[in-house]
Image (tube, rainbow, N blue to C red; front, top):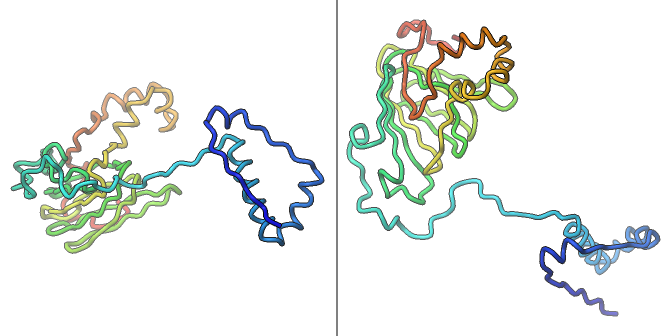
Amino acid sequence: MHIIYKLNIVSREELGNLKIQFNPTELQEIGPKMRNSKSCNLAFVILVILTCSSGMTFQTVAAADPDPLTDTSPNASSFVLRNIFENGEVSNGTGGHRAALSPALFPALLNQGITVVHFNMVPCGLNRPHTHPRATEVLSLLTGGPMQAGFVDTTGKPWISILHPGDVIVFPRGMLHYELNVGNTTAFYLSALNSQNPGTLEAAGALFAIPNRAAATTLNQNLQTYGDTKKQSLPYDSPATLLLATDCVPGEHVTTDF
């Protein structure tokens, strides 16, 4: 006995009109028939048809930047960018200097799925809490510090560490994280991110950007108190700028809990 299965390709509209009916007695008999490999194949076909008729669709989800289709970007005339603190995307604040890259500035990055940021952070300098929605970050402290750095995971657990030169820390993709120089010498560190456009969402500025009632409830404040807090808040941080932390004395509190 030969069993032939016929698979017809139908349009989305035809799929939406597809209806399948089964005799209850036949359904009860499917279990015993699973002992036979041909019946098992038939059950699989039935499962596929049921899945399709329920309107479910499957898509391939990319977890990172797409793979490059060419060796290099056609716009790249050089693969070296000289002195990132002069020729990069530089922001200068009271807490130090930050220099980043972008494909527009450095076309060799295009489609390579990576970027890098350099930091010179003075003592008590702070890179405010933020997230990168499209990338994981690997940070390496090269000189100076030490630094307090860490992130908070989705269970609310903080992972805070003290970094010394040569140390490396990972900030998982999308996790809220920050860096603070708790030492008495300027910290020079690098951050590599696995996206050419990782995005940066500054936490406090984003919170103050939503309507007052929701933000006040989030902070457990009434509208009057929240209004006063908001007036004293810093503007949304874009591009990211290093600031001096409040109540910070260089080298005095080299700890993870202050």
